Length: 188
Image (tube, rainbow, N blue to C red; front, side, top):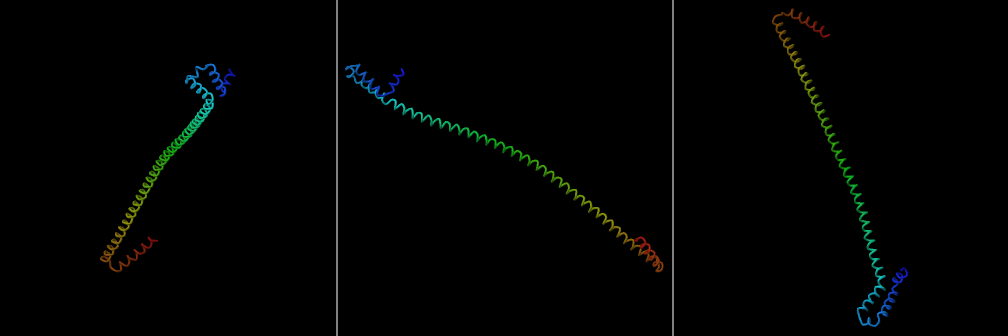
């Protein structure tokens, strides 16, 4: 069978087969056109079939290779897109985490600033209260001093009138000198 299949692959052998079939069939075949069409077709297939099949096979193989290359490229692009998508998803999650941390930090900072402001306000109010209390105490001290001074001035004036009205000049001079001495002793 090996030798026969090799012979079938050579186009010239098909011509020999056609001629042999013509001789065997005799002259009755020559009158029928269908037979000649069959012989021509078999000869044509025998001669050009291999070349046509090789060309068709080459075109189909090239197309299959091109399709496979496109499929491989599509697969590579899909894997790359999935990688990029995974990277973007990871970055999105990181950004969300960072944003959440920033919000939490901002809340903590806002609370701290609010507490600082509250303490500062309380301190300011306490200082104002202390200052007001000091002013009140100073006003009380000033009022008491003024009352004492006024009382002392009134007492001096009343004493002066009484002395003028009740004392003579010699006795008044004696009392004035005694008062000045006593005052001098108390001051020093």
